[in-house]
Length: 138
Image (cartoon, rainbow, N blue to C red; front, top):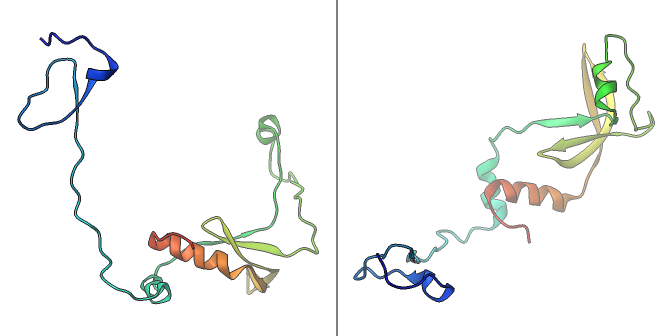
């Protein structure tokens, strides 16, 4: 057992390979990491080519509605849920939670489709791609 009283001054000590930890002490050490170096000075655009074959899910958001749990539990076939978006307003196309475009709902064969009418802020697209690469948006 250690004869030292527990106090803020002696409760935490720097780890020293030559000195074993005494009961009641917390040994703290800082590892030595190798310096990280970039292996390529290619621009981010070139790095984005690595993502060209990655599949993402695009979602068309038609609108939103809020309801209580009681209202949710009362839903049944035939229930109509009013949405907050007017029919004249385009739907949002969202990827990874980021709006990337807007468009009109249309039908192709027997499936719904979206005709893109507007591409949203390109900087957001760049940020989405960079976050997929683990890089900070500048």
